[in-house]
Amino acid sequence: MQVVGYEPSGTGSSLLLSDGDEVRHRPLETGDELAYGLGTRRCAGVVDGERHRACDRRDAPYCDYHTRTWVCARCTGTCLKDEMDCYDEHVVYLAAFAPDTFKVGVTRSWRLETRLREQGADRGAHVHTVSNGRIARELEAEIARHLTDRVRTPTKIDSLAATVDDDAWDALTAEYDVTDRYAFEYGLDLETRPVHETIASGTVVGVKGRLLVLERGGTNYAVDMRDLVGYDLETDGAAPRVQSSLGSF
Image (tube, rainbow, N blue to C red):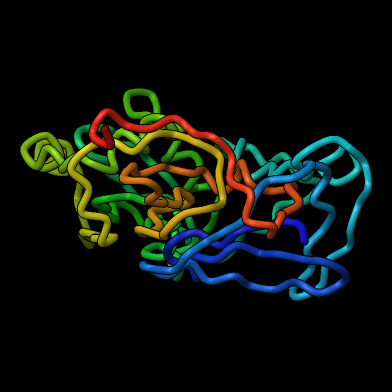
């Protein structure tokens, strides 16, 4: 059984597994027990709805044939496609990651709250509504001159046991005409930063964005679910040795 994808918080919080042509969703609910070892890793192939097309190439998580580049993520207003197709309504938003990392982003208007949850944002602010993606990317590129448009995994792990600097967030959003504000809780209630590991065994504490938090042996671990994609899961109960936090001793 191979991990062929994942659904972050906001869109189901599950691992996508396949041992053939069909995709199975393994929900990640608080209190669930995972007992998988990680075997070999190879290309995860292609997921098309509830179907999976496997690939035996050893490159992981995707081989050259199955690596897809989303050109819209690199767009700054000049379309990189053969023909522009983002004519639906878009929004520009600000997102906060505790304690004081703030980013700008773009999404379709109907996906705003879901997109913020997918990223694991602690706060969100809707600052612009425009008629298409090109205009939204132009506005994003302008704001990105002084505000990041990407938050790395280590920064998001740091945010798991932190709270938002509300004074800094309020000062930032005061510079914009905010249409809507969002505040999210993910139920993690962590006192210390989890240890970053790639494992698939332990008790599910919760999911924030694509970070899965597992508890094992008195230590909390933060797993980037993207790092699990491509692995064959072993169910013989074997668990890898992992780093423990000082609090577990």
